[in-house]
Length: 111
Image (cartoon, rainbow, N blue to C red):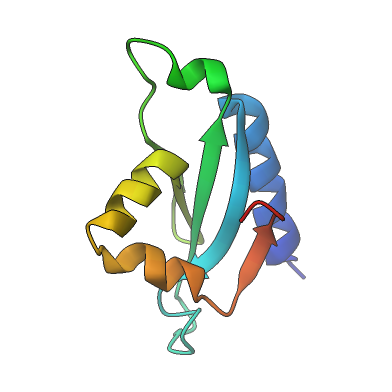
């Protein structure tokens, strides 16, 4: 039997290592989070991350979104903290949804 939570956390570890980021908060978004999943629903994993301080001081900052995996089972992507805060200031409901998700894959004291 597939341990999807373990698999998701392994993917999050892989993202941190390959993208050189620190994931602050990772949750389930979409139908599974709100109890409307069908048998063929994928896992919509969303996260907020920070990069190294040096990355924010570059003239050409890296992308503010990480799109990691999209297939029949996993849909994984996240926002840089700066992007998340800018969206929050614009009253974008996405961050509110992510903050209130009942399914949390990982979080940190900083969050």
